[in-house]
Length: 348
Ligand code: CP3
Image (cartoon, protein in one colour):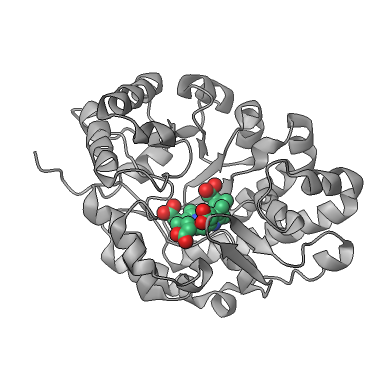
């Protein structure tokens, strides 16, 4: 059967309205698992790639040519706005973001100047405008959340234990507050500009916030993430709030904000939804590693996620984290079809 163009299934689900089929998209749906991505990226540094709007448009569209995804996410990186305000960040292949002079003191924090999106990151906004002319599904803009950005700035490189970040948060609360305040302001400017350029939904990636306990999250992170959601509320676009390893933080994350809370695979979807509250949607939560297994295994686990969603309005199907580079594109395409077929409803 030929599918009708899915123009607003994703946005409807974000607003917890009934949908004809459960919408599906994948974090890192543009990425190294696609051979055409590897060809188009070439040897350019990823942050350099993001400064070429026509390449950004191409990379964003690639997964949509292969599978009927219900949303596109603009190809960018959470470090783009930090580089845009002049910080010497680079993204080391196979490692992640690196900052030669980490931010650890009040003087360092003062190096973070405000982001002026039209002047500092015009290529991103141009890519969004171009994409809106090409897409028949909604376009998602995004930002790293204050904590996750702070963790890269303080550590200077990817970290497993986030020890320096926690040391700053506990040992120099005033420096921490100043840093988080500036990052929250930056996130608001970054997200607002993307929406004004045409993004129809946004996702705040707080990927590493699961490193914190609920008490520290509530004191040292929640106020700043809340500031980000409040700062974009008047724009009226759905906001997704995502983190990894956040089982014990889900209700606090919902309190911080977001119409939809993104959850990883560690908490069953129905349990996560209970923690998040029935007044929010939920996005997730198939383990990306399952996609490396046999189709039968993928199918069974995906149907398990859908069973736990129970057909309630407000579920956006996604992986619990980004697509792994070893994933077969054919598996993901089959997964999109499976989600659509298994959730087909008579009226939308
Ligand atoms: O399709 C999409 O989802 C949009 C593209 C996207 C990228 N980065 C491109 C990218 C998105 C949404 C991001 C966000 C991002 N960047 C996050 C939050 C999401 C998450 O995964 O939790 C984080 C933590 C980063 C920081 C970052 N950038 C890391 C850890 C890496 C991996 C380094 C590596 O080589 O493994 C990057 C680089 C990066 N950003 C890649 C992609 C597709 C992979 C490297 C490449 O293709 O050069």
